[in-house]
Length: 387
Image 1 (cartoon, rainbow, N blue to C red):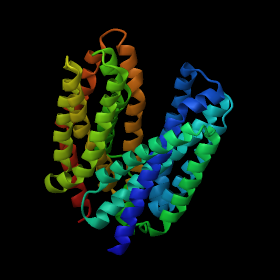
Image 2 (cartoon, helix red, strand yellow):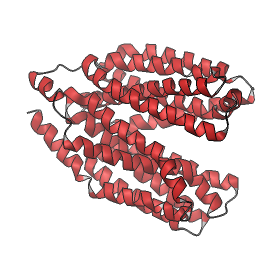
Image 3 (cartoon, rainbow, N blue to C red):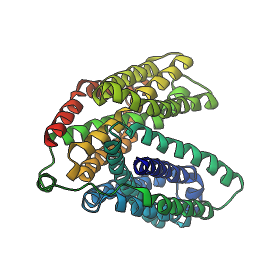
Image 4 (cartoon, one colour):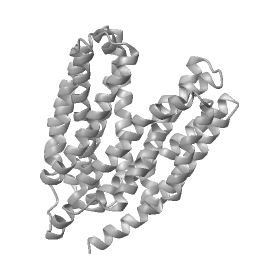
């Protein structure tokens, strides 16, 4: 039991580290952009390199995690991600920044998938849901990065120095948390056969749902404050509360979602969470009043908070021999939703108002709620396969 508790704590550490490292990069984007001498337009294209690297890292590390075990792959991925954090701080032009972001994305994607696979293993050891709480630790890591970044920027430290210190911290955590991770689970002959089988249809359904729901999260991250400012004419400081309300609700909801999942099941979390998120997004989009819009974004955060973790958990539990590959597929395609959000929403606003465009993620929430039964089917298949 002490071993499982230590492994659970280490998993929280890696999730928090992932959020902290990504947060440190995000808060230093303006300084890095200025140092590299790139325009906002060029930065937009360079950020695609970050996404491409993350997607590639996810697809490569998934099968490696199945082969060598999360105990080996998680610390290596965390160390690579930590070491690559300093690279954007050393960039001097668009080319070096693009290469740095590609490597940073690879490290992020590798850690993302491998730590989620280990989280699934911890869930099996504990016999209860824990995935949403792990994802909440990621959010807390981002908040810590915002606070630390505010201090380093106020001290006018160079991006290379600030990101270098964060990289050293990440390397220390990567090594310190590694010894207590769980050993790989023994594989049976059946596991070997299923690992080589084609990807099941239900995994692709989970991946499609992840894409839609992570697009909804991306829309809230990118457009919530802009919605209040441009559509409802809110002051900049007031508009910032839209994202703050959403992010806070997401974090709190993730700490609570596992308890509800243990009692009512993952399918209920996805079905009713997506439905609540749809109501919140529709309220925000259609509200003529700022307070009601803020309430809408808060409700959306609560609803979405537990949805994506259930999909990752289901992908990992579906087939333990191919847990890494399955999580990589679901996480990778879901991550494309985060990247697609700005690309889809932005051009649509040239033809229809922003508040009308925000009804698109509402439709995705409705689809997710309607197809939540896939989680029940996945659980049934897993139970039969383990008998």
